[in-house]
Length: 504
Image (cartoon, rainbow, N blue to C red; front, top):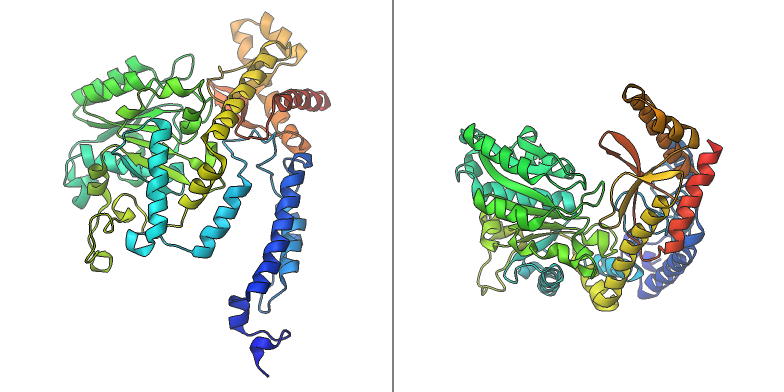
């Protein structure tokens, strides 16, 4: 019997290369499940009260030697993965900097995986490469960056920050460091960033041989922006000590409070000391689409590099980060590497283009398709309104807290991150009457209380916050980054906090 036609004993070819009819059957079932999930996401608990053991017990751990049918796979997805996952698309998922994803981008990921293009160079994926080059150009226009800049999509902000520091090192450090390593440089390379900067900057410096300890963290002002006077003093101090300052990192929205560093003044300092200016806009970069935040980006064009995360405020599913370089040749000098198996033969300049000359990766998935489909299928106006609404939601929560007796803000709201804490009546009265020697003990009690409150809120499941430590104090931290979130959700969040706090 022909095994290809034997449904009880399908051949490997039949399993790996199903018929169009079979694909349609799978797709219909999967899309129905997708529609069901997205249609009910508002009614779910944000976070499941579960354990690793409980999840493992639901999964068949035996090595799968024989195939199971697609319906059984979807059943596991529905009963285990959906039921025991944190729902990042829920309107009250305020933890971390977490986007909800969009249906159109989910279809883009399906189509991208179907094509399975590997965007190493133009010859490898001609149409896909042109889509990426086009969407990078659109992103430059969105944030107001140099029209002649270059860029590419990477896995996320971590890789974007690493690529930027690599380019900064190549541009500002002695040239022999590229081939001979950090030991060839007698001077310690110095990078400057505020103490609110994301840890991936220091991590990148460690991996690049600059050194974790050579990232000088500068204090912040009362609004959690970098202290410019201290920045200048640190650079001058290092130059006097014989070190080599190479880069300053400015934040276009810090991950703890959403603070936006003053780009114009930092740019002037970078020019004065011949430093590479990198802007970490992984969180806040696409706030440029919101009219109320657009003025913050007036000097973005002065940056040498910008890190962005379309999988944050373009509401895309992970992974999709982006790195832009004002001078494409600076990036090419950093990443280009000649090898016979990558040599492009017999093509004109446009067709000889290779992404591997501008970033650390060789194999690269077709991330650009979901960016292109979202921008084309949704349009900038709808995205602008959604981001502006997110900003308004954070400001609304700030107003609710300021008008309350039992909560206080621990940082001002600049973009869509809000940081507050609960003040139980007894501790609030004690704090107001405390002497300086007693005050710290009460503050520690407030820290412990708010930490318990955070864990209880997460387990409750109606709303989800994360945490931050600001000036030594424990903060309930939230980030609005969801087109489903409304002003009413901010009111529900405060109600949830009060309800859970009463149960502690």
